[in-house]
Each structure stands twice: as C-alpha cells, then as structure tokens.
Length: 346
Image 1: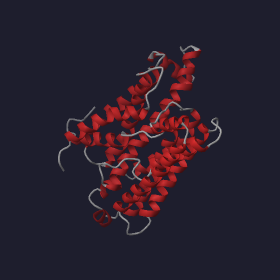
Image 2: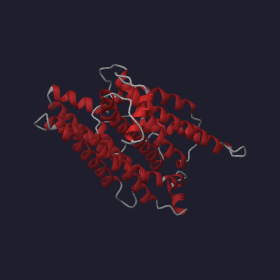
Image 3: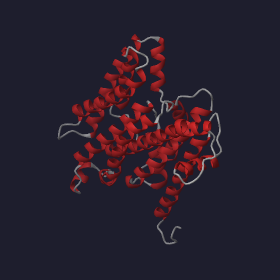
Image 4: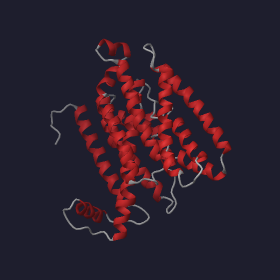
C-alpha cells in the first residue's frame, strides 16, 4: 500500500516497479505456455510445484519434455539476455552521457560477428560449427572491446569521446574483415552467418545458460553497484571528480562489466538490437533520469520484453521462426519513435 503522504516521485516509482514486476510474471507464464503446442498455465504451475517436490505434476511426458527441456531453457536464456542488454544499454548511456549509446557501442557486435563468421566459414566439419561458434563469438567480442580500450581508453587523459571514436574505428575494421570472409563463403555458410547475425534463442539449452549466466551475474552486479556513481557523473566529469567520484575507475568498471555481459549474451543468442536503447528510454519517461532507478528497472523490464518478443518470434509463423532480431526491430523501432516524440527538450 502506498502511503498517502508519499512524494509523487516515490508513488510513481512504486507503481512502475509493480507494473514491470507484473509484466515479468506474465512474460514468464506466456513463455512457458504459448507455442505450437499450447499448454494450460495451471498445468505449468502444477509442474513447477511438482519439480520443487511439493506436489504431483499434471503434465504428460510429452508436455513435460516440451516445458523443461525446450521452453524453460529458452525462457531463462531470454530472461538473462534481456536483462543484460537493457542494463548494459542504460549503463553505457550513463557512462558516456549519450542517450543513443547501446550495448554494441565499443565493437562487441563487430567482434562477435567476426568470430561467429570465422567459426561458420572456416571450421571444416559442420558438426563442430555449433560448438565453436559461441566461443569464437565470445572471444571476438572481448578482443574487440579490449582493442577499443587500448586505443582510446588507456591514457589518463582519455575521454569518453576518444573511446567512442576508437569503438567506431575498431568496428569498421572488424566489419570489413567479416565482409571479406562472407564473400569467400559458400551459399550454405553465408545463410548460417545471416541467421546468427539476426539473433535467435532457438539453440538455447541448459548447458548454454549455465555457461553465460556467471558472466552475466557478475556484470549485472557491477552495473547495479555503479548506478549511484553514474548519477553523479551525469552532471559532468569535472563536477563528479570534485565530489569524490573516481571517474576513470568507474568508467573502466562499467565498460568492462557491460561489455563482458553483452559478449556472453551475444555468444549464445546472436545480435539482438533495440533492447538496450528502448528500455532505458521508456523508463526515463516515467521514473526520471536517476540511474539508481533506471538500471534495476531495466533489468526487470528488459527480461520481460525479450521473453515476449521471443514468444512472438517462435509462434507467429509456426512451425517456422522469425529471427529474434527482426522481431525486436519491428517492435522496438516504432516504440523508439514514440518515445522520442514524447521526450521533453532538456
């Protein structure tokens, strides 16, 4: 219950927090229940109770297999990926003081794309491609961010502008190499590259979830703990230094954490756009500009958004699937236009 004397900003925060929490619960239910073979929500609830050892499952063996081995790992990967991309986007926007910053700003997308292309085009055995692709994509993303930081961020006098320009240069170089490799690829390999680049959760498994989750948890923790410092840095780097914020250390920590988590997500799900831009912007409209509010709410809303988008991707053309990146773009672009039209000039 909201106290009658609560300030309007606090009341709004409580309402928004409740709304995004409800959205997350609904997304989880929809993600498990909806599909080519629909499963009643009450049966899924009973199956969860049974899984915890508190009752008897009402699912038949086929439904149980679909829920626990196909939809559940895909759902968890969507939750992990959506939360990480949204938090990374919000954190990048804070550390760079740039509302258009997204999780792929420092070369993550270009590095991961090059790594995945190398795996698909150059690995000889097609049976080894699924195993090699995530690891080479992850490595490529980390190398790209490391190169960006080495070029534009290692100097004591470096600024966010030099880091951004370094990211543009590294991305351009890696993208050109990737394009060259694609020109040498067969039609079958090229199709695989494009499928990966458009993003999908279709390959989700408990194994892939288990691999990326530790990286994401560490990254989310650092970004959440840095939210207060991002609020101070939003007034300007010199002012933040005068208030005791170690700007360079905060910038390094946020960039490293957000890039690590984003690289892990991209290695498992491919390139998924718009989540890291529209979620923080939408929240700014309703809870204000404080990153102590935006970052944790982005975690919840980003997870809900991506799970719902994935549900659309796998059901709208069943038994075929739309690439998840296409769905997020189709949903995200109009939302972003609306958000921009609603923003008041600062």
